[in-house]
Image: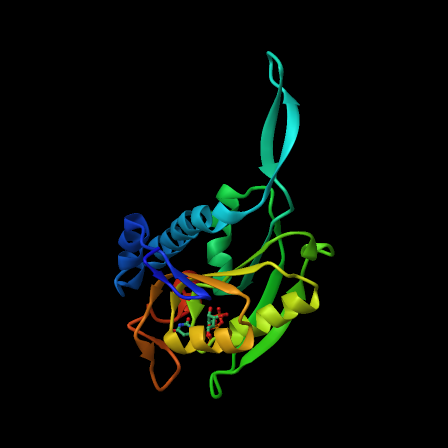
Length: 212
Ligand code: PRP
Ligand code: URA
């Protein structure tokens, strides 16, 4: 992770960048886009989970009793619908025991402001870390909205995992939710007049579900 500020970590893994190069490519079809998004999510999860707390416990091996380490608290994955759903399988491949909450948010096309339309979270979500996934952090409005919902649910350990972040979105989250850490595969140049990330990868939801 060469690029680190107080709230942002950019991954420097060759496999993540290799896969991201195909995801950015406009000729990549829906099937490959979905596969790559899931594969990158798994690679990012490996790094994001590095700091999760563990506890010691005892098990009986076939030969003797021994001390082992297990994750200390239940993990909850929260994809932001729709595009965040495309990252779910990759995260669950590494954390199959994670619970999955859902937050539905769409950007209003004329204002680029977030509109929440669905929330379903585990009742005890605050008992452990939350991995909030959404491939695109553009203005940061959708992500900030999701974080506010998680804070209202009592969460204190929230990690945002996205594919591509814009400087504007990172700055917005630093202002609105300074304690939340963002993990991204790339920090892109800027937002354009339509609040799309440049160079970006286009509309992640449309590319993931073939609705463009
Ligand atoms: C996209 C993306 C983020 C949001 C980012 O979702 O998946 O949720 O935009 O933009 P922001 O940082 O400016 O808020 P979109 O609203 O297109 O919904 P969709 O996933 O259902 O297509
Ligand atoms: N949402 C997307 O899917 N892409 C962007 O570039 C910005 C918001």
